[in-house]
Every structure is written in structure tokens, then in C-alpha cells.
Length: 146
Image (cartoon, rainbow, N blue to C red; front, side):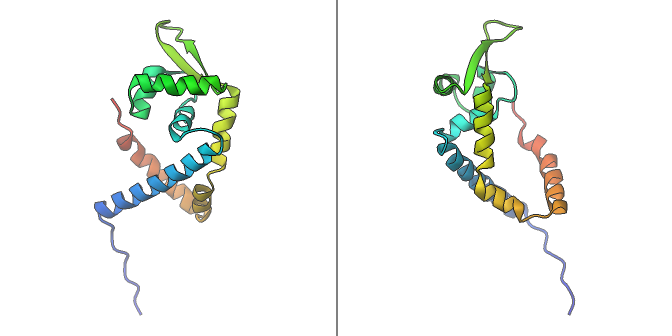
């Protein structure tokens, strides 16, 4: 018996798989966020805050209008998860910064993404390394934002 070489997937098949994985990961993220009283968009905003981020940049990252970001930040600020502070270079610009509680909340959300963790646990160390390398190669082309 001879082994047949695996068929190279088409771009359409790859797009379908990436979309399915993205949707499943987003659903897992949203479910974990809701257990912490956050909407998926509130959690997504919180996840963007690795340092101070201008409100307008958050609108770009969230693909929404700046006025929507104001309401999202208002609700997160009321819970003590973020704070606004003036940009040191331009005091007219307001940066959003995660508080310690905000960082801890998004860490817990990510830790509780059971479906995603289970899927990744199915990969051995070499497979995870390979997947990471491939995703890093794809990332720049997928994140081109103006």
C-alpha cells in the first residue's frame, strides 16, 4: 500500500477554516467576557490596552465610530477597569489606560476561554510552534490598518 500525498488545500478552503476558527474563538471570548459582566466589545477594547491608547485609535481597532468608543469607555471606567488620561504630547487627546483591575479582568477572561484552550491543548509543542510561526507570518497582511 502506498501513502498518497495530502492534497494542497485551496485558498477558499483555508479562508473557510480561518473564518470558522475565528468565529469559534470569538464566541468563546464573548462567553468568557459575559461571565465577568462584559460585552464582547467591552472585553475587546480592554484587550487592546497594553499601554495608553488614544480614543480615536481604539475606534479604528474596534472598527466603530469614535462616539461609540466614548460610551464603551464610560461603562468600563464606571467599573474601575479603565481610566482616561491626557496624552503628554497633546493634552487635547485622551488616552485610555487599563487599571490593574482591568488587566486582571482581561487575563481571567482569556484564562477562561475553555474551548480555545482545549483546542490548543490538542497540539503538541512542535505543532504549537509551527502554528505560531505560520500565524505570525499571516498577521502583518491581515492587520494592515490605515
